[in-house]
Image 1 (cartoon, protein in one colour):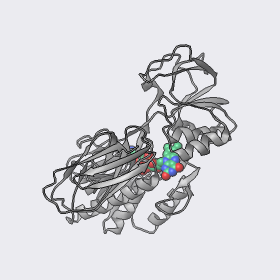
Image 2: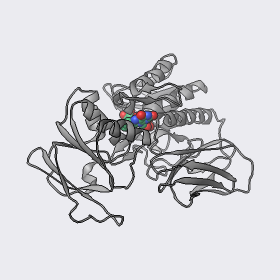
Image 3: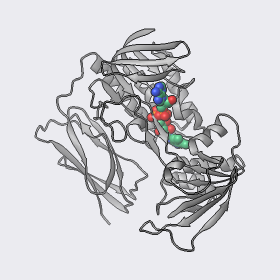
Image 4: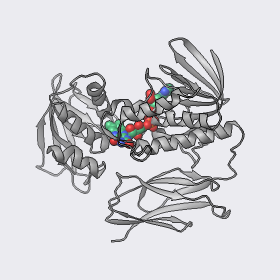
Length: 405
Ligand SMILES: Cc1cc2nc3c(=O)[nH]c(=O)nc-3n(C[C@H](O)[C@H](O)[C@H](O)COP(=O)(O)OP(=O)(O)OC[C@H]3O[C@@H](n4cnc5c(N)ncnc54)[C@H](O)[C@@H]3O)c2cc1C
């Protein structure tokens, strides 16, 4: 089959469904492509609540969030192709994809990439020991339990205290799996404070901060995990070793944005975009976890919506940015998104600081924006709103964080 459309969206997670809807609302013909048999992405396996508090002003589970978007999509003429894998995106705006009916091509005017992120694997940590069964990424363990009704372990240790690690600690515990602790190499938890309380403290699951896994052992199945304390210089503290007898190690050690199959735009490691979600190829837009890892699906859906809107306007020749201003990471800033702004449009700037602050002052110069954040930490994304502006002499904007004490 050969298709022609205004906007193609690749990946039907929260970002992609929101992008497709918004492109449709802005007058575009839209094709939404998803490799899995069902749309929804990560939302399908997150059966806990805490989704949609900002976007829908409702406390939804992941599947409920997805169903709300899906119901809206069903009222449109957006063509949703599920069970369809995109193989190639060429510079001449042709997208090649495969499904049970064969290999097909779509010629598009604009493209929105919403391909999400993949999990970093345990093997990438270089921890010595036996390569046994029983070592799962958090996403795989979550899929087994929530989607396939399987119990992957009897006892487990979790490495990584980001939100996914914390939520999985509670999920395993509720499934009757003995969770012996969560190990975190940093001196502070990687996830939101509300998740530390609701997923660990409420269930008396210990959190070992400044600790790391140093060895794994077992014959066929995992049997022992060795954990030691780590000092400020990153060295193992002598005589601090503990041994955990567990048959599963669940790793939650980071997500890596998925930028395939587009190879010819700038990434770092996710797609680098403007505030209008445009990448370095002017017809390709990107949103959600394939750009930067967001804390909440609410931000992801909002970004998807924006990407869909500008892709539709681009397809109709109604959006051509005149200039791009670079946004630079200043002192104590670890992550900033987007990397460029079109000053004619407003911006939601997402910032992660690089260390824990009691009271942080975040400045955006030369725009003279100053915001105060109590207990700013790297795990919590800070949102800064920048209005559109017409000051043509500004070539670069710098964001920095300082301790106010
Ligand atoms: C355990 C866990 C707990 C979470 N808890 C919360 C919470 O409490 N509250 C909250 O707001 N957020 C939470 N989140 C975060 C939120 O779920 C995600 O940020 C969001 O769903 C990501 O959406 P996305 O569309 O960017 O990516 P994804 O959901 O990953 O979607 C990407 C889609 O692209 C598809 N795709 C990729 N490549 C291709 C290709 N080549 N061809 C076709 N399709 C392709 C994938 O199959 C997938 O469906 C949680 C996440 C996890 C993992």
